[in-house]
Amino acid sequence: MPPAPPRRRARWTERLRRAASTAPGRLRLSALALVVLVLAFGALTGWQVTTRNQAADQVLSSSQPLSQNAAEIYRSLADADTTAASGFLLAGNEPAAVRQRYQGDLANASQLLTQAAAHAGDSTDAQSWVSQLNQQLPVYAGLVETARANDRQGLPLGAAYLRYASDQMQNTLLPIAQKLSDYETARVDRDYGDAQSAPWAAYVLGALVALTLLWFQVVLFRRTNRVFNLGLLGTTAAVVATLVWLTAGVTAADSALSRSRATGAGPLQALDSARIDALQARTAENLNLVARGSTTAYADQWTKSSNLLATTTSAGQLGVAQRLAPGGAGQDVADARAEFFTWKQRHDAASAKNDGGDYQSALDATVGSGPDTTEQAYQAMDAKLAQAADVEKADFLSAAKSGRDATGLVVVAAGVLAVLAAAGVLAGIGRRLAEYR
Image (cartoon, rainbow, N blue to C red; front, top):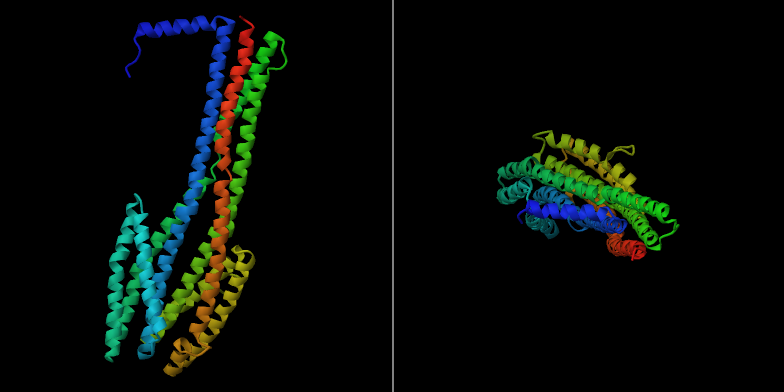
């Protein structure tokens, strides 16, 4: 729209000057200014609360689930590597369940990568990581199948192919999956920050409106000697009520969101890390047997991963998860930690047999079908960690929903109270204007 001609602007300026030169005119202008202020306050409050609600909904329905999916992609890939080594060691005695678990890990990773690609958004990095994983996963699976085929023919190349496949997984696929997981975790942090941001603009404007209303009522009192103006008092009460309601809603939402992070998202991340460290230790344990003493790299990896997982003190990922996870989940982690030490004892015993030249006994103690194998202890530990994760997921969903819904009525209340406040301004000043007729 083109600007008004200078002559028209001059006429409007003259009209405003004339209106401001009379008491009724000043009252009308004051009424207009106050109505604009209270409606702007209501609109700003509604907008800021809506923005917070949207961010909280992102945490609940998008970023946290996607972060968990990214961690699950990593875990599925690592578990596939572990299970492939177990199946290779068992050779012709490989149970169908082991093969199905390996295939299930690959299928689960592929499905989750499809979901990640659909939600990568505008992040070129995330899109690139997902694309690389989709390209490399069939390559890894092909190497594993080549290793299995060579092993079935009794060719020693089978073990070399399996070690090469594992190197591809450990040095290519898993680092990329870790980058994707870190990206999704950072997105969760950003959404939590937005969801818990203080609506300072609404607070400042609300305080300004309340002070302006008080000042205007004092001016009216001095000029009219009337103590109370019911319309303006109602407007002031509506503004103060909006501020109180906003504060109560934001406080309740922040408390619930903080709880969802402390008793849900945070422990879940620690549990994911613990399960991943356990998988790395299990993979190293199996591949050390595949290598048959040709390298000490896998024994060193076992030591590193098992120390990251837990020590004799409360340190390690299991100790962190136990401290973060409250209630029943904490007990599940404590049970998992006990299973880890059982696993470690059995591992040390199997390693001693292997170092002493009794390879078959070491193999049976690691991937055999007996009840006292390292595989059984690892599976028992992982089951407890998965059980704790299920508890934390439920706690997260409950608290995050409360955080999202806590300010739901504030938007409606802000709109209704703003309209009532504007009506109060018109009614209050209208009474004063009526005295000039």
